[in-house]
Image 1 (cartoon, rainbow, N blue to C red):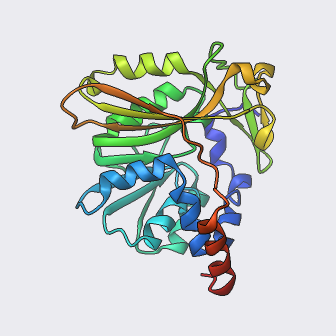
Image 2 (image 1 turned 45 degrees about the vertical axis):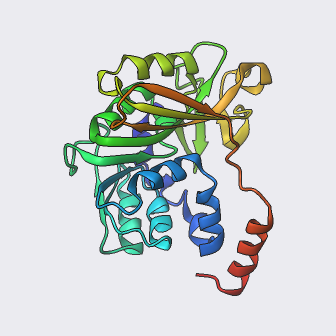
Image 3 (image 1 turned 120 degrees about the horizontal axis):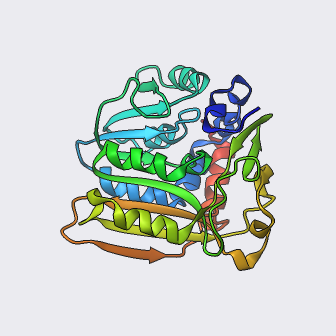
Length: 266
């Protein structure tokens, strides 16, 4: 099987996000609250009448969080996997979940106020081409993530940089961080944008059934889960860096959520 982003259309992968359905409300909120991407997209859409495109819905993963938080926005969720779209419609029958294509054109508008996409760009055979589509779809701002490496060139060979998910091979491209910055600086749409970047350093090789070049197993490569927020409406170009971890913190809030879920599971 040729390893490409189209493999996400596979029927075998349709149950990949099943386990999230069994996470109760409080733990689910706690999980998403820890993400840099969540906090940034919420800062964009909070108390505003805006349109939001969510690219890569899984089984309505992010919309479930929005529903728990009672956000009232013009939401559209899109995915290339028809099984994810069908399952999402069963969970939330009155929500706009759309089957789209790799170009993000099928069944979608030309633009939305904001675009959110988590856990998708790394699984493209050409992540920068995909990120261009995300940026093009957004009028006011966008939030996404991508796995990066500080040292070493990007390996675009999906036979060497891939992940085995639910009996299906999908790309897993780790982008050279300088290449990502050059891409952001060269995009004319971002000439006056405020760009916030959070790098969560971690070993990527061997985690989550990832099959990556051997240097991704070494600390010196400085691999990171890199999350990016772009505000197109800023008056001047600036790039802000942070290095916060995104793992679920097992603190008082976590154990409180765990207790509430055991008592009032929803």
